[in-house]
Length: 143
Ligand SMILES: [Zn+2]
Ligand SMILES: [Zn+2]
Image: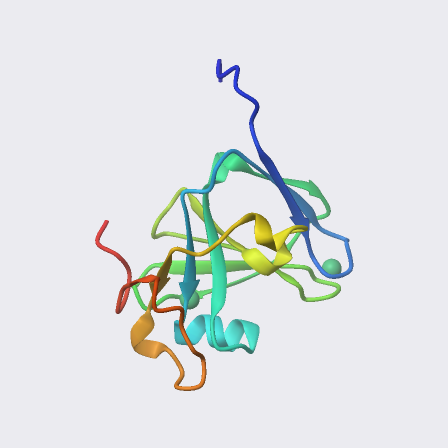
């Protein structure tokens, strides 16, 4: 508030367009996550996450479905996705509380962001090659 600079907005949504969101302002981080839960939840080798504060993320259309389980960190993790097309949208959880991790592939322009780090590298699959330039963490970076 009170910031007169033009604020950037990233828009995105699910595959069928039933759920749409907007991210206001710059992301906190962009990371590749290689954890087993992301592999199971997406059916891929890793997922690309855009970390934003909860106040930066607004659902502007529809209501995501959710699935909650216990993450490896011990806290609950809730995955938000479209109940119609199953497109993954973002993740919230106890740790880190106010941060939302938006699925980069759901952005309208995924090339607007670029990962700078890799987390849960310990779970990386042999065939899922990683950009060696990324800052690597075996689990999460120290907070
Ligand atoms: Zn959808
Ligand atoms: Zn993960």
